[in-house]
Image 1 (spheres, rainbow, N blue to C red):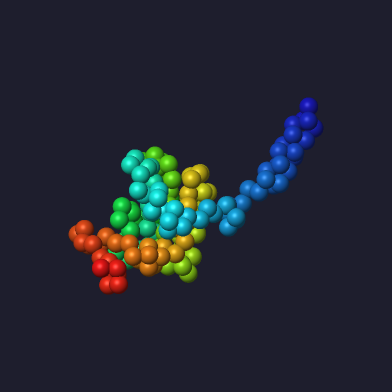
Image 2: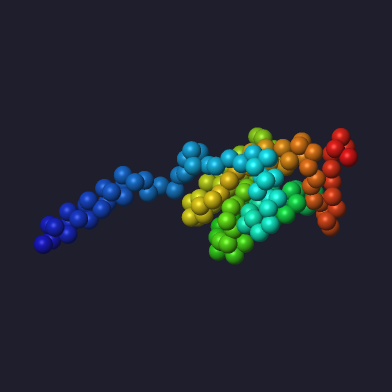
Amino acid sequence: MFRKIWMCLFALSLALLATGCSNKTSDAVIQVMTDTQLTTALDGENHGVLLIDIRQPAAFASGHIPGAINIPISRLDRHQRDPLLTQAQKIVVYGNDWNDALPRAAVKKLIRLDFVDVYYFHGGLQAWEDSGRATSGPRGRRFMRPESR
């Protein structure tokens, strides 16, 4: 009897090892959203899209994509049970620009926290502004690049 229990525990341990118990998340699981896809997703009524700006609060306050909320990557764990996140149909994460690695890391972190429809908006705020779209700033002011006015 003891031998059977030990063998079952051993087999279970091997199975856990084989499935990868680490908290590493591959880049292959990251779903990328383009600016066109983001615009389409944000245009619908009751679209259920939550847009998260993972930059620091000062950067967010200086300008962000309209409708975005600010959750710096260091605070994602604290918002794991936040109804804004748990009730969202899609979560889209963005940062500063094309070279910003933090949004990808935030997407991986959200996936490890068991969120499913999480997307990385490649290009971030820079891509949004480069396409001529308005950004929201302090006290609801609207900012646009000079060439798009």
